[in-house]
Length: 215
Image (tube, rainbow, N blue to C red; front, side, top):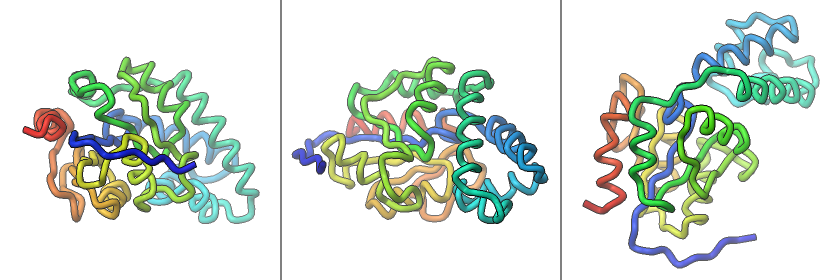
């Protein structure tokens, strides 16, 4: 069903999750290592491929003779287990930033699944917004603009009213293709195309709050 709302004059911010609000790099490495061992593969090689491709594409490269549905089922099992038992931490300043934003002015746009995001946010005591656009919400994920355009539709905003905060190139490209302002955080060197770059999230917090308030 298409959501049709009249955009208001307010501004919105859409956050990626892993690498932007939550530091899950070690968790991702552990999950992929466990997955590789299940299939008798080299964990380092699997992780090298997984860093730059979506899971189904990773399976096609590292395990082309395996059933991709079985591969994905094992990955989901391991990721769900990690949400329950893994150690997570929010990036410095994430809690203060999210709690400082007006309710309804922000959303999460993630390539993960909403139940895992909620689990990680509960573990890190981060507030959960009303809108989470996850991997199940769109047919094409980042770098397609579809996830960010859906987020704008859900909050009733035009792309020009929206700020995207991302760490990864695919997310930056998705935000740019959606016609939104894109800020790049938590990486030492700016991703090509990002309108602004901050080496960490805390450095960006005041400017993010100012964007939403229109100041």
